[in-house]
Length: 338
Image (cartoon, rainbow, N blue to C red; front, top):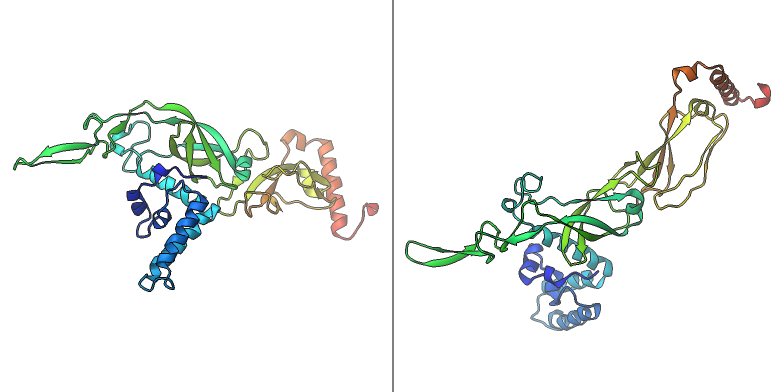
């Protein structure tokens, strides 16, 4: 993943990281620099800043250089840093609340435009990868206050003229046209096991970028996941399987078609005859939930019959047989003693 160089201006490099400088600025390379360019720049500066090579060099400067190289030379760390910087840049460049429509939940207070939600089913969240979504892209128009210049001129009583950033567009020269969003396709890359509420960068084919927020969708492809409960911290996913009263009292049933979030079919779960299964019992399948360590938890619900069915002779006979088998097995008896 290469970060677009326009996202990392020199001023922003200093601003976004607070007291610590951006690794790109430390190494003196652009965000689109290759691994070879990064390595060459590091070696060149290391000769100048290493205390053993240059007695006047400060150790802190070499330590900062080393930290920057550790981030940008590791593909995973570099991707993580680029993503964080893109998110910060896009948040920083969001339109001010004064330029946003307030009747559509986008401009309340100082928070600016809320990130749009991207609906992701749980199986897709588990395996990750790119997904294509259709989002409303805000349409920008020229700021009427500064005529698109981003600055306004003002004169003082002493006939001194000076310029200041336009307060309406915050110096951008454009504002978001109220009620005029355009639909466009965006691609979002989901990390493996992405959690609900995570903010990611969505990129359109035209190069436009938006910050989006992940929301789980529990409908559609899988009946088991329709009412799933997700623990965002551990990654555990709890689903419900329903059995009858007779099976709960006497066992002798099998849970089949157990599919974990990655799509792998797990072995059927056999509950032996004579086993009592209390309502809301939980069967845990290790690492069957969201990565890296989430489990798939099957909560066993008991379907109590309606009044008419419960009063039937057939149902009462089934309950009596299962209860008798259970009683004999629990007390050391066998089926032959019944």
